Image (cartoon, rainbow, N blue to C red; front, top):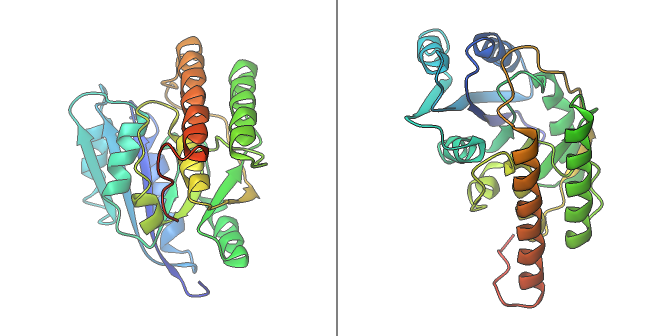
Length: 246
Protein backbone atom coordinates (compact mmCIF):
# COMPACT_ATOMS: atom_id res chain seq x y z
CA UNK A 1 0.00 0.00 0.00
CA UNK A 2 2.98 2.36 0.16
CA UNK A 3 3.12 2.50 -3.64
CA UNK A 4 0.89 4.87 -5.68
CA UNK A 5 -2.51 3.34 -6.33
CA UNK A 6 -4.71 2.75 -9.35
CA UNK A 7 -7.82 4.73 -8.52
CA UNK A 8 -11.35 4.85 -9.88
CA UNK A 9 -13.70 7.71 -9.02
CA UNK A 10 -17.36 6.65 -9.17
CA UNK A 11 -20.24 9.12 -8.96
CA UNK A 12 -23.88 9.58 -9.98
CA UNK A 13 -25.05 12.78 -11.67
CA UNK A 14 -28.55 14.15 -12.15
CA UNK A 15 -29.24 17.59 -13.63
CA UNK A 16 -25.78 18.91 -12.74
CA UNK A 17 -25.17 20.88 -15.95
CA UNK A 18 -24.54 24.11 -14.06
CA UNK A 19 -21.51 22.78 -12.21
CA UNK A 20 -20.43 19.41 -13.60
CA UNK A 21 -17.71 20.76 -15.87
CA UNK A 22 -16.00 22.65 -13.05
CA UNK A 23 -16.25 19.66 -10.72
CA UNK A 24 -14.80 17.15 -13.18
CA UNK A 25 -12.04 19.60 -14.13
CA UNK A 26 -11.16 19.97 -10.44
CA UNK A 27 -11.06 16.20 -9.96
CA UNK A 28 -8.92 15.65 -13.06
CA UNK A 29 -6.50 18.43 -12.19
CA UNK A 30 -5.95 17.16 -8.66
CA UNK A 31 -5.57 13.49 -9.59
CA UNK A 32 -3.18 14.31 -12.44
CA UNK A 33 -0.78 15.87 -9.94
CA UNK A 34 -1.36 13.52 -7.00
CA UNK A 35 1.76 11.54 -6.08
CA UNK A 36 -0.37 8.89 -4.37
CA UNK A 37 -2.12 7.98 -7.65
CA UNK A 38 -0.34 6.22 -10.52
CA UNK A 39 -3.39 5.80 -12.76
CA UNK A 40 -6.97 6.99 -12.51
CA UNK A 41 -10.33 6.97 -14.19
CA UNK A 42 -13.47 9.02 -13.53
CA UNK A 43 -16.68 7.04 -14.07
CA UNK A 44 -19.86 9.13 -13.85
CA UNK A 45 -23.33 7.75 -14.52
CA UNK A 46 -25.70 10.38 -15.88
CA UNK A 47 -28.99 9.37 -14.28
CA UNK A 48 -31.38 10.39 -17.05
CA UNK A 49 -30.70 14.12 -16.61
CA UNK A 50 -33.17 16.47 -18.27
CA UNK A 51 -30.57 19.19 -18.76
CA UNK A 52 -27.22 19.15 -20.63
CA UNK A 53 -25.33 17.05 -18.07
CA UNK A 54 -24.89 14.14 -20.47
CA UNK A 55 -23.80 16.34 -23.39
CA UNK A 56 -21.26 18.13 -21.22
CA UNK A 57 -19.77 14.87 -19.96
CA UNK A 58 -19.52 13.45 -23.48
CA UNK A 59 -17.81 16.62 -24.72
CA UNK A 60 -15.32 16.57 -21.85
CA UNK A 61 -14.06 13.13 -22.88
CA UNK A 62 -12.33 14.89 -25.77
CA UNK A 63 -10.26 16.81 -23.23
CA UNK A 64 -9.99 14.23 -20.45
CA UNK A 65 -9.49 10.66 -21.76
CA UNK A 66 -9.70 9.36 -18.18
CA UNK A 67 -13.37 10.40 -18.04
CA UNK A 68 -15.88 7.64 -18.82
CA UNK A 69 -19.51 8.81 -18.78
CA UNK A 70 -22.36 6.31 -18.65
CA UNK A 71 -25.96 7.21 -19.41
CA UNK A 72 -29.40 6.13 -18.28
CA UNK A 73 -32.17 7.04 -20.71
CA UNK A 74 -34.53 7.60 -17.77
CA UNK A 75 -33.95 8.57 -14.15
CA UNK A 76 -33.49 5.46 -12.01
CA UNK A 77 -32.23 6.96 -8.75
CA UNK A 78 -28.85 7.95 -7.36
CA UNK A 79 -28.03 4.50 -5.99
CA UNK A 80 -28.86 2.77 -9.27
CA UNK A 81 -26.61 5.24 -11.09
CA UNK A 82 -23.80 4.79 -8.60
CA UNK A 83 -24.10 0.99 -8.78
CA UNK A 84 -23.78 1.20 -12.55
CA UNK A 85 -20.70 3.40 -12.24
CA UNK A 86 -19.11 1.10 -9.63
CA UNK A 87 -19.65 -1.97 -11.84
CA UNK A 88 -17.77 -0.21 -14.67
CA UNK A 89 -14.70 0.66 -12.57
CA UNK A 90 -11.36 -1.09 -12.92
CA UNK A 91 -9.25 0.54 -10.20
CA UNK A 92 -7.71 -1.25 -7.24
CA UNK A 93 -9.36 1.40 -5.06
CA UNK A 94 -12.64 3.22 -5.70
CA UNK A 95 -13.46 6.67 -4.38
CA UNK A 96 -17.19 7.30 -3.99
CA UNK A 97 -18.42 10.87 -4.00
CA UNK A 98 -21.17 13.11 -5.31
CA UNK A 99 -20.89 15.12 -8.52
CA UNK A 100 -22.23 18.33 -6.98
CA UNK A 101 -18.84 19.44 -5.64
CA UNK A 102 -19.71 19.18 -1.94
CA UNK A 103 -16.84 16.75 -1.27
CA UNK A 104 -13.48 18.25 -2.30
CA UNK A 105 -11.23 15.70 -3.96
CA UNK A 106 -8.41 17.12 -1.84
CA UNK A 107 -9.72 14.91 0.99
CA UNK A 108 -8.34 11.84 -0.78
CA UNK A 109 -4.74 11.81 0.60
CA UNK A 110 -5.96 11.75 4.21
CA UNK A 111 -8.36 8.93 3.39
CA UNK A 112 -5.62 6.94 1.69
CA UNK A 113 -3.19 7.57 4.54
CA UNK A 114 -5.82 6.27 6.99
CA UNK A 115 -6.35 2.95 5.18
CA UNK A 116 -2.59 2.55 4.85
CA UNK A 117 -2.14 3.01 8.60
CA UNK A 118 -5.01 0.69 9.47
CA UNK A 119 -4.31 -1.93 6.82
CA UNK A 120 -8.06 -1.98 6.20
CA UNK A 121 -10.20 -2.03 3.09
CA UNK A 122 -12.34 1.08 3.55
CA UNK A 123 -12.40 4.63 4.86
CA UNK A 124 -15.33 6.97 5.46
CA UNK A 125 -15.20 10.76 5.56
CA UNK A 126 -16.69 12.39 8.66
CA UNK A 127 -18.52 15.49 7.44
CA UNK A 128 -18.97 18.83 9.10
CA UNK A 129 -22.54 18.77 7.82
CA UNK A 130 -23.89 21.73 5.83
CA UNK A 131 -27.40 20.36 5.27
CA UNK A 132 -30.62 21.84 6.61
CA UNK A 133 -31.47 20.87 10.25
CA UNK A 134 -34.22 18.41 9.23
CA UNK A 135 -31.84 16.51 6.95
CA UNK A 136 -29.09 16.55 9.60
CA UNK A 137 -31.47 15.09 12.17
CA UNK A 138 -32.58 12.35 9.77
CA UNK A 139 -28.98 11.44 9.02
CA UNK A 140 -28.09 11.39 12.72
CA UNK A 141 -31.12 9.31 13.71
CA UNK A 142 -30.70 6.74 10.94
CA UNK A 143 -26.98 6.49 11.67
CA UNK A 144 -27.72 5.89 15.35
CA UNK A 145 -30.13 3.06 14.57
CA UNK A 146 -27.74 1.48 12.07
CA UNK A 147 -24.91 1.60 14.62
CA UNK A 148 -27.12 -0.10 17.21
CA UNK A 149 -28.17 -2.97 14.93
CA UNK A 150 -24.59 -3.46 13.71
CA UNK A 151 -22.96 -3.02 17.11
CA UNK A 152 -20.73 -0.34 15.58
CA UNK A 153 -19.82 3.18 16.66
CA UNK A 154 -19.26 5.09 13.42
CA UNK A 155 -19.56 8.86 13.72
CA UNK A 156 -20.92 9.43 10.19
CA UNK A 157 -22.55 6.18 9.11
CA UNK A 158 -24.27 7.81 6.11
CA UNK A 159 -21.39 9.75 4.61
CA UNK A 160 -21.25 9.34 0.83
CA UNK A 161 -17.51 10.06 0.69
CA UNK A 162 -15.84 6.67 0.88
CA UNK A 163 -12.63 5.03 -0.29
CA UNK A 164 -13.08 1.26 -0.69
CA UNK A 165 -10.93 -1.59 -1.98
CA UNK A 166 -12.25 -2.15 -5.50
CA UNK A 167 -12.83 -5.92 -5.53
CA UNK A 168 -14.71 -5.66 -2.23
CA UNK A 169 -16.88 -2.77 -3.36
CA UNK A 170 -17.76 -4.36 -6.69
CA UNK A 171 -18.88 -7.50 -4.83
CA UNK A 172 -21.19 -5.90 -2.26
CA UNK A 173 -24.41 -6.61 -4.15
CA UNK A 174 -26.09 -3.28 -3.40
CA UNK A 175 -29.88 -3.07 -3.60
CA UNK A 176 -30.82 0.57 -2.92
CA UNK A 177 -32.07 2.69 -5.82
CA UNK A 178 -32.55 6.16 -4.33
CA UNK A 179 -30.56 8.28 -1.91
CA UNK A 180 -29.86 5.54 0.66
CA UNK A 181 -26.81 4.13 -1.13
CA UNK A 182 -24.30 5.64 1.29
CA UNK A 183 -26.02 3.95 4.24
CA UNK A 184 -26.17 0.63 2.42
CA UNK A 185 -22.49 0.63 1.44
CA UNK A 186 -21.51 1.10 5.10
CA UNK A 187 -23.94 -1.60 6.22
CA UNK A 188 -22.73 -4.12 3.64
CA UNK A 189 -19.10 -3.50 4.61
CA UNK A 190 -19.90 -4.16 8.27
CA UNK A 191 -21.72 -7.36 7.30
CA UNK A 192 -18.40 -8.55 5.91
CA UNK A 193 -16.60 -7.67 9.16
CA UNK A 194 -14.96 -4.71 7.45
CA UNK A 195 -15.00 -1.73 9.82
CA UNK A 196 -14.17 1.44 7.88
CA UNK A 197 -11.65 3.81 9.38
CA UNK A 198 -13.11 7.32 9.77
CA UNK A 199 -11.39 10.51 8.68
CA UNK A 200 -12.50 14.11 9.27
CA UNK A 201 -13.03 15.78 5.90
CA UNK A 202 -14.06 19.09 4.41
CA UNK A 203 -17.68 19.23 3.28
CA UNK A 204 -18.80 22.25 1.26
CA UNK A 205 -22.36 23.54 0.85
CA UNK A 206 -23.90 23.00 -2.58
CA UNK A 207 -23.41 26.12 -4.72
CA UNK A 208 -24.87 24.95 -8.05
CA UNK A 209 -27.83 22.82 -9.09
CA UNK A 210 -30.66 21.64 -6.89
CA UNK A 211 -30.62 18.62 -4.60
CA UNK A 212 -32.79 15.79 -5.92
CA UNK A 213 -33.85 14.78 -2.40
CA UNK A 214 -37.41 15.71 -1.41
CA UNK A 215 -37.21 16.07 2.36
CA UNK A 216 -40.46 14.40 3.44
CA UNK A 217 -40.37 11.63 0.85
CA UNK A 218 -36.66 11.15 1.49
CA UNK A 219 -37.31 10.86 5.24
CA UNK A 220 -39.97 8.18 4.69
CA UNK A 221 -37.71 6.23 2.36
CA UNK A 222 -34.84 6.53 4.83
CA UNK A 223 -37.04 5.22 7.66
CA UNK A 224 -38.19 2.24 5.61
CA UNK A 225 -34.65 1.47 4.46
CA UNK A 226 -33.26 1.58 8.00
CA UNK A 227 -36.01 -0.83 9.07
CA UNK A 228 -34.94 -3.12 6.22
CA UNK A 229 -31.31 -2.96 7.39
CA UNK A 230 -32.38 -3.79 10.96
CA UNK A 231 -34.46 -6.77 9.78
CA UNK A 232 -31.62 -7.98 7.57
CA UNK A 233 -29.16 -7.90 10.48
CA UNK A 234 -31.63 -9.85 12.65
CA UNK A 235 -31.97 -12.51 9.94
CA UNK A 236 -28.19 -12.74 9.68
CA UNK A 237 -27.80 -13.15 13.45
CA UNK A 238 -30.45 -15.86 13.51
CA UNK A 239 -28.80 -17.67 10.63
CA UNK A 240 -31.90 -17.40 8.48
CA UNK A 241 -29.87 -15.82 5.69
CA UNK A 242 -26.19 -16.38 4.93
CA UNK A 243 -23.60 -13.84 6.01
CA UNK A 244 -21.48 -12.67 3.05
CA UNK A 245 -17.81 -13.56 3.04
CA UNK A 246 -15.26 -10.79 3.78
